Image 1 (cartoon, rainbow, N blue to C red):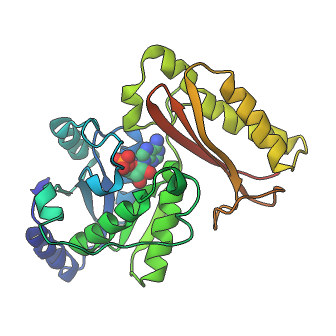
Image 2: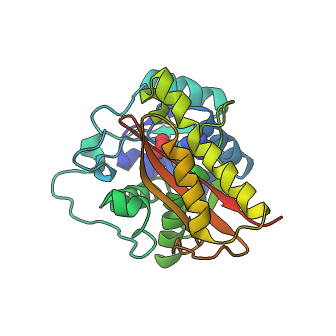
Length: 282
Ligand code: AMP
């Protein structure tokens, strides 16, 4: 496994791979890898013969009062896991390499960034699209793989790729969960045992919403109301948003249709967790 730390070397390596006829996939990560990340890499490998994983904690997507400084890091552990799953190249640029002095260009997707996490975390998605566009330019992938756990991020990146005519296939991978249903996340590391127990309310909410729809409820406010009560019954929780929305535009729904996205953001103690699922009448 090769480790590349500069944009210039990454350009050269990707160019060489492309010229030799390889299909390149990219899995962008901020490290502290778990099984969810590794699943993305496995899917990427199925669709390519050279897998690049990027490892970069991107300050531009963290707000001023967020956890950039304390975001969990474990480079040695990450490299070992990447090696284990068959990553060919780890691209791990420094902060200075990604954002050298003087840089002043950002990539902004307008509408699909407005609600949900875009509303609670102003500027977050500008940070995401800017860094992902830069990673695409450095690694020149044919395809890139993202998790549906960050559903809005996947929607925003898909929109960016379409709007900017980027010749990159975007693949979304279903959320990988712990045995107790909690979506795997590097931030789960912040939870103490009591908070972790409470954090199960996110998955329970997704299951409740699905059950209500199957039982015939199509009024979005009835479903979000029931989810709100469920979450409030769990200690240490503070709801950021509960939204039933259109899976493509992320616009709020009043009445459920064919396919519906339930997206949640809940603070458990000091940790902000997100989860989502697509629900449809079966
Ligand atoms: P992060 O390191 O948190 O920026 O995540 C890197 C990639 O892993 C993103 O595409 C995430 O959506 C994806 N990811 C994170 N957690 C999960 C999970 N539990 N299941 C599937 N994908 C995930």
